[in-house]
Image 1 (cartoon, rainbow, N blue to C red):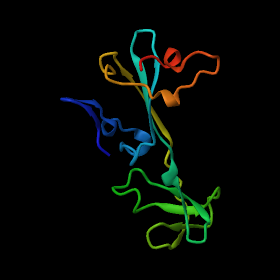
Image 2 (cartoon, helix red, strand yellow):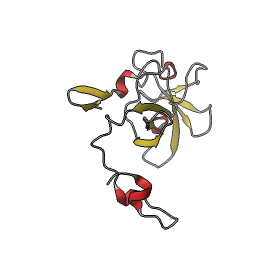
Image 3 (cartoon, rainbow, N blue to C red):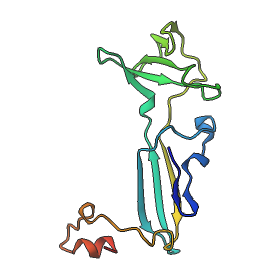
Length: 148
C-alpha cells in the first residue's frame, strides 16, 4: 500500500505503525478508513482498520481453513500452518501441504484498528459525501454531516 499523503508531508503512514502482535509488521492491506467525530479539543478522530481475512482460506472444494502464522519467522506466510476451520488438529503446512501439528507459538492474524487525530487544518479540503450521511430525525444531511 501507499502511505496517505498531503503535499508535501505524509499525513498518515500506516506502514510506520506496526504492532508486536503482528511481528512488528504492518498488515498487508487496510480495509477501512473513516473520519470520526470531532473531539473535545477540536481535532477529529480518524480510524483505520483491517480485518483478519488472511487468517481464513479455502480450497477448490470450498472447505475453509484457519491459517496460523509464526510472526517471529522471517517469512510468516512461508512457515504458516492451515487447520480445518475452528479446529487445531488435522493441520497441514501451507507450503507443500505436509501434515503437521500446530505449534503452540502460532497465531491467527488479528484484526487491527488504529486511531489517529487530525486537526481542522488537516481536514480543510475534506468534503463529506452527503449520500453517505443520512439524518433519521428530519434534519437535512448537511446539518448532520457538517460541510458540503
